[in-house]
Image 1 (cartoon, rainbow, N blue to C red):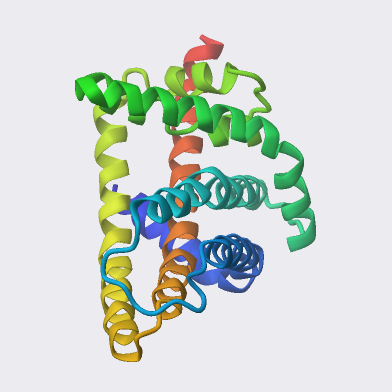
Image 2 (image 1 turned 180 degrees about the vertical axis):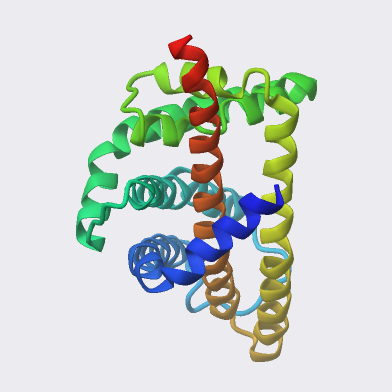
Length: 233
């Protein structure tokens, strides 16, 4: 896990210019459009926004922002590992091309996890087993529901390790994210402007979502490499 965390951070740091160039526009556009639609840009600060607004913002993040960034960076990490390059425009265009396929499996994954969490264990198991559906679409070219089977096949036999690696990355991202959100919440309260909260959430996403996407792809490639000798055997 330590090597994966270090590898993801180093890859992000050494290529921060490109990573931010392909991720910041996605975060700014989705966050801005969502906040504008919810009337948050001109609203006064509220410590407890309506649940409806929270659900809408969460849906926009999980169904658009995260899948797009994961798709962009999954292809970039793959090309980087191959010693190849691609421009920011090419990476974004490629992600938009596969986005319908990515969105389908993300909706199925999140829907099944949501239902499974009512029983706790099935939801957590599926959350981990199907976590790499985006990488299965982008890297291995699976379509339809095949990415779900592809992700589950790679995780099979490595479920506990995958869960621990995922938890480690989430924890590493949570700390800076929480500090940024807390700081901007205090500023928003002092300025009595909810837009400050929106800006803080966008900055937190800019700093943490690429790290999580890069880490997930590096681990996916690691699982893939471990399975290839078995497949040849």
